[in-house]
Length: 185
Image (cartoon, rainbow, N blue to C red):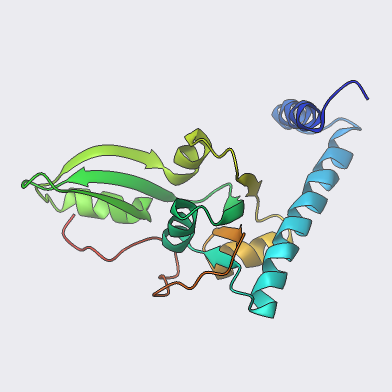
């Protein structure tokens, strides 16, 4: 083989994007789509298997998964390609900084309320994740195009992780998977 596995994946992804831009009307488009769906199903099935066996070697929701990433526990990070969560770093008047992961809708509502907090940086969560140096984490971006993908997005907030070791999390997150505990944005 002339290419490494990583190079082959990049070539296939580039071909897939090119075909999608042209409406996917090429004989190669369907096998590429099918291959991506098979990989997606395999990753989500591995995640759901950990959940079903209640191993504790999984995380879901933005807050818990970010905590697991900070601890170095995440082996595979699974993120929905249409996740509408933003990562906001903000600063109080006293100088204290805070990082929130909230839905885009909640961000707009809070900003429109006129709270006197300085927003230092704001990124779409998926953009922020892809910019991080995830040397020891496998990143899988999934769609909701399969029944498994839809279940993952609706049931687990579109963000989850397969962990290297068992972790326990303090609290459950809300349905959107976003951290929505602070009302004074």
